[in-house]
Picture 1: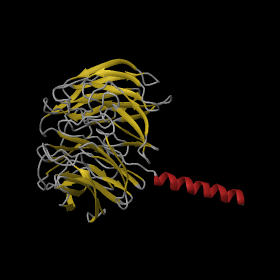
Picture 2: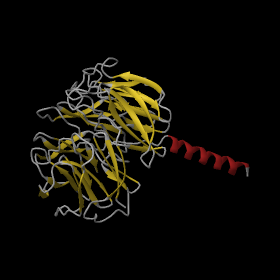
Picture 3: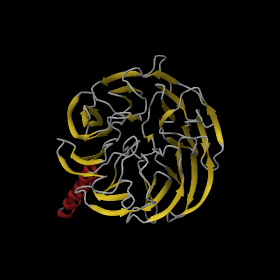
Picture 4: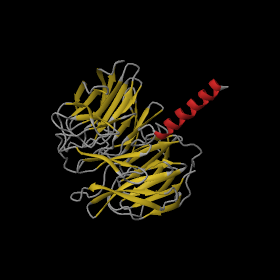
Amino acid sequence: MKAIAITVLGMICFMASAQETATTKWRGPTGDGIYHETGLLDKWPESGPTMIWHFDELGLGYSSPSFANGRIYITGMVDHTGYVFVLSESGELIDRFEYGEEFYTSYPGSRSTVTVAGELMYIISARGGLVCMNSGNGEIRWEINLFKDFDGKNLQWGMNETPLVDGNILYCTPGGSRRNMVALNRFTGKLIWESRGKGNLSAYCTPLLVELSSRKILITHTEKNIICLDAKDGKLLWSHYHANTYAIHPNTPIYNDGSVFCFSGSGQGGVMIELNEFGNMKRVKWVDKTLDSKMGGAVLLDGYIYGSGELNRSWKSLNWETGEQGYSSSIVGQGVIISADGKLYLYSQRGELVMVPVNPNEFTITGNTRVTMGSGQHWAHPVINNGRLFVRHGNVLMAYAIR
């Protein structure tokens, strides 16, 4: 009986530890824009999905909400200062915590989405401040400036990276010539390793962590190059030249079955790179210039990539293996894409909110409405949580019922 009790106690402690360290990610639970929700509406009413609530006092910003600890965390700028707003699941303000100066010049507002890992949360301001706070009371545990403490430099429109947490480690990209990418102890902020990468500036991109059978690798897009590092020590495994006019590469790469798709706007498009079992680059499989998504991401479903172009202003499906185009449609303006339950959810830069069934050969709208609340650019990536679609537009966060 004593042995059984110890075993049960151990299982309880393990489960409690796992729950405590559950970590949110940019663009959904697996970081690929796909949400694991079911029972969602196949067709919206003519007037669009029902808006359950809206919160109108976020300040300026383009970040997405994060869901953890039964709460909603989202950043916003008020009078040049960045805050994490903490909301209840019914849209009521619980608290707000100051984390530092935000970007108040060109396209003012917060950029980075909050990463929550148990009782701690992490924010990168557009001014290069990396802050670790208690997610319950906002107490600052540690903070670093990626430019002063490392040798990074700010970007034309400010840092836009969401902190990437894996276990006890936090990864981010200061973009310095020496400390191009770093791994930090997430509890203390102490440096674990630094990597020179290719010495490019950061490029608004949140890195991708891939766990192979042999090791973990990090893939991200910097000013002129796609780079791949060994997550253990920061060793550069390979790089691939991939530049565009404004050095804007915010889209996190997509990995599947030994290949990685990296893509950006301004006509640059995407490149499919095949890797070996150790994460080293084998070859470029194909290149596509049409899916040149500027900042809207893409999703991979059933062997096809779905997303929109910037200069090539249409929504497209591309075969993962060959790059062959399935369809191209300009009915909806370019923008952001996420997916759940066999459906694509599109949020265009014109304020259109659209649902399209996943079908590589046909673009059919089964839900359509327009986001009229809020102000500024329609750039924030929507989030799906518990049967609700959350859309941020400027100072307003809206919750729509889609189940």
